[in-house]
Length: 125
Image 1 (tube, rainbow, N blue to C red):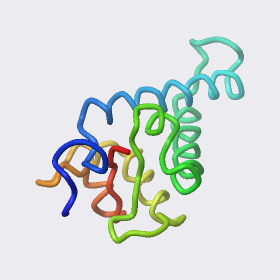
Image 2: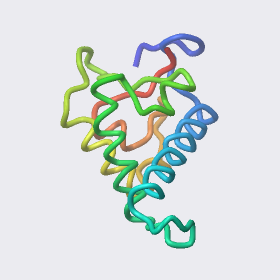
Image 3: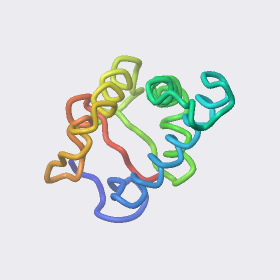
C-alpha cells in the first residue's frame, strides 16, 4: 500500500485496534444503559448497544476521522485513494464490522476485510 512499516501513517496494529474497539464498545454500552435500559445492568439490551456502537462509528469516522476509541489510541480511518472518507465508506465498514467475521479476516497489508471492502485503512496518526 506504500505506507511506512512503523510510526506515523503506518497501519494500526492489533493492540491499538483492540483497545479502540474496547473503548468504543464501552461508550456504546454506557449510552445504551442510560437511554435504553431500566437502569439495571441485567436489563441491558445488546441490540441497542450494537446500534449505538454502529451509529457512533458512522457519525464519527467522516467527521473526526475515526471512532472515539480510534482517536484516543492515536488511530484514524482514511480513504486509501486519498481525500475525504465520505459517508458510504463508514456505513459499509461499520455494517461489516457489526457482523464481526470480516474484522477477523486480515490481508497481507494487515487490513481487516471490512476495511478492504470499504476502501479504507486504519492508520496511526
